[in-house]
Every structure is written in structure tokens, then in C-alpha cells.
Image 1 (tube, rainbow, N blue to C red):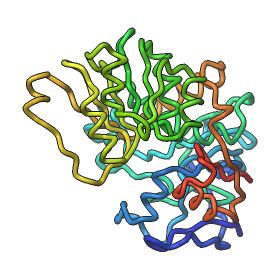
Image 2: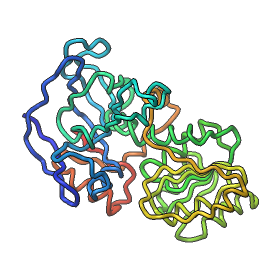
Image 3: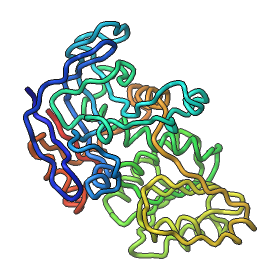
Length: 342
């Protein structure tokens, strides 16, 4: 038997239950979970944003651990290997998978939402859902690579960022903060971060932001325009679900620029389509990631090109999962990433 944090419906705490350890089938790998990150998407799920979730289901989609057992036909992984979870489960043969866009798979399922996830002592999935985690990456950092780091990597690719582009990042929380370092690696020129947390703004400066703007103290659109001599940014990225912040992001882009929406914003947003059309502004969205992108961010962390040492602000035990979720939702302690460690 093993402990697992199970979802039983919206607006209910997760239940810590004893359930059987999954049996390993052909082509599958059983992983002893060592760390699993708590994500804003988990909060959305708990508030009923994903009605397709089965009940019950074990939540948790950011995970790193150690291979405990391998099934018949497994060729790439062995018992004792350190691994990172790729939570995006795709079919591999639909139109989108064939085009290298498995994040848009017609039969896409996500671990921790449609499939049992990593808020548990063990996790069993097909071999291809795990990538090797180098020895120099701690398990807690390995867990957040699978969502909090690879999500902004994919978003920056969707932005088509060019060397020297001025970039504005709205929202420097547990996902957006990693876009700061990654934007530098992509070749960003002037890099501006908009936030409401002074601590996160200070960290953004440490990680490479040229200018930081506290949206509670000044008009961020005016501040972005002032910082770019009235032109706006080539690329504006919204990592926040705040309607107001998204609308401000839409007004911070230059003529011919691009706005990429990454954060979940369920409220209707007003867009001046005539202004967008007249200025040839491109509005894009970004969702999930592709497997090779996760392999790339693992490589970036292993080589020391990105620093995650300040990304994880709080750690909790599996039995404390609901406290961790509450800390993230209510911003107790101004958290970035909270990780369940085992």
C-alpha cells in the first residue's frame, strides 16, 4: 500500500488515502516519488476549472524520483535511475503529434488531472513519460523542471523571440520568474518585469531583469512605454491570470510586436481589435510543452546555465499537501514554488 492525495471534487480538500501500489505492466516504469511540485494549475483544478477530471484521481504533475521497478519491454530505464516526469501523455500518431506538436494531441491526457499523478509515494506510467535526471540536479529542482521551467521555455519559442528584442514579462511567480533567465538565454535585449510582489521583483533583478515595475505603485503600461522610449516591447508575455494585468500586457506591445498569453485568465478580456489590426500586433497563446523541450531545460540546469536555487521557497510533506495548496492560493509567505518532499 501507499499514501496518495486524492481529488474528490471541486472546492474540497485532497484526501490522504492508503491505496494499492500500482502494478507494473509491459512498457511501464514504477517510480518512487522523491519530490512533487505544487502548481497554480492544481489550484485551478481544485476550483473546478477542469470538469473532465475523473473522481477520484491522484493529483500532482511535477515530479522527480527514482525508478523502483521496470516492466517487460522497458529498454531505456533501469532500477535506480533518477528521473523527471513528462506529465503530457500523447498518442504519437495524430496530426499534431506527427507534426511535432504533441502538446496539441487529439487524445492528450495530463498526469495529475486525467491520470493518477505524483502527490503519492509511487507513480507508474509508460517509460516514455520519464526522462533521466542528472546526478547534479536535486530532486526538488528536477520536479519543477517538468512544468514551472519548461512551460516558459515553450512560451518563449511560441513568441519567436529574436536576439535584441525588448521583452516585458507580466507576472514573476512560480512560472514567470523562470522566463526571466530563459529570455536572456534566448537573446532578449531590454528585459522588463511587472509584478506586485517586491520580493519577486528583487529576485527578477538578480536573475537578469533590466527594469522592474511594481504594478501597485505605478501604471505599468506607462512605465513600459517610458522604458522603451514610447515604443513598447517587441514581445510581451502574460504569466498571470489577472484580467487587469492581461489587458495591461496587451497595451504594452509595440507596432508589429507579439503578445503571448500563458497564464489562465477565465474572465473576459477587452481587446481593441482595430488598434491590433492597425498596428499588426500578433496575439499568441502557449500551452504545455513538447518532450524535447523538457530534455532541453534539464540540460540547461545540468550545465548551470539556469539557476533554480531560489525558485523553491517552501517545502512540505505529503501529509501537509492541503496546507501547501492553501499557502499558494492565499500567498502565505509570498511563495514562488512549493514542493512536496519525500
